[in-house]
Image 1 (spheres, rainbow, N blue to C red):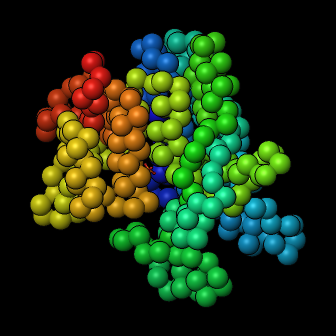
Image 2: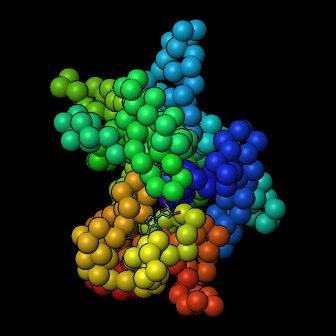
Length: 317
Ligand SMILES: Nc1ncnc2c1ncn2[C@@H]1O[C@H](COP(=O)(O)OP(=O)(O)O)[C@@H](O)[C@H]1O
Ligand SMILES: NC(=O)OP(=O)(O)O
């Protein structure tokens, strides 16, 4: 399951520790319901808002303490978000009378040092700012992008995830009955050097794309992409908006090629869902975090099928 970074801050974007803990406590309810129902789950979480905030702290404190690179910031978000998820998921499981051990893994994701993503930043991080304030930071050398109605957002390099290096450990923990929190923020980006050693690199990997990779590697039955909308839509934000329920990979690929899904938000989710079923996974589900149980059960809500469901036609249910 990939859990959106926005599910881990307050709806108004407040990212104080109290607001993050409260949001994560809410987010762990639906996850705990699935665990209590007997599912084995690996959770990958986002870190876009949080990692961007660490960059701001770096910049403001640079005269006092040395700034740390972006891979360190990513590792820090795995620590703080992982720690909070552990607390809140354990509490939510206890409230349901379910006892399952939970483990949060500091995890690295290998990327290619020559990935074109290093030259073309695409990953939105941190807070939204009005255009004039973003412009000042652009003049100081930062890359910012117009993200629509919410304002402008900083963008950083986001190379393709190639391999979650902790996959064997995830499998060991799953086999031992743990709920596993892994590859948070898409994983700490590392490259393999000529001498075989690893080196962290400055980037933020898209957690949905990493989730597809990890779900394939652990042979998950289903990739769940939990976000804040119940359906993927075509014609999104227009008078012709139409929610997608059950959709074939071919149809979804066609819409993606027509530019229906925004980069940095729904685009990577759709791409991740497609990659998982194209790599042999049975089913991908994109829906609101609070509707995941209904979507997995195949329920029909008042307005029809809950969630956007992409089935692999080559896999029997
Ligand atoms: N075609 C689309 N259908 C539905 N939502 C879309 C679409 N294009 C962009 N979005 C936006 O994508 C958002 C989810 O992406 P994002 O904010 O990155 O989520 P998360 O933090 O949960 O990973 C939705 O809240 C919606 O505003
Ligand atoms: N790393 C990442 O994809 O984070 P968000 O989902 O929070 O953008």
